[in-house]
Length: 146
Image (cartoon, rainbow, N blue to C red; front, side, top):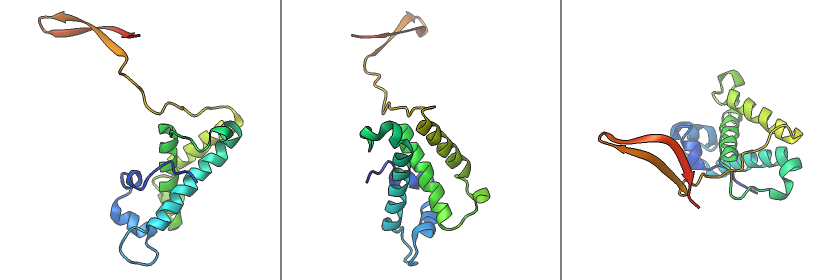
């Protein structure tokens, strides 16, 4: 099964103490990696299931588009809080989660596409500016070197 987000990314959204509270069913005082990895896998699988009609032969995504990684992060964070039965109106990820689900439904219908650009390569862009006594002034001209 694919993993479109990571525990490190989740720790960027949810503080460690809160993540412990959300995953530590045995009250050991540590993040339960088994629970966390299952949440991540479920979020990734949810994305795959929603877009399989359009991207079936490209799943799992590799490399992972940044938009997919962000969607998986949102889904995982939302589901971590739902796991502890945090109501939607108190779940700070709820609105973003709804937006992700709406977007994935649009992709499934063919009304939207996933941005498949993983990263942008600026190595072939050349800045064309004009030298002045005050430095370089931009001419707003960007040219691709070939």
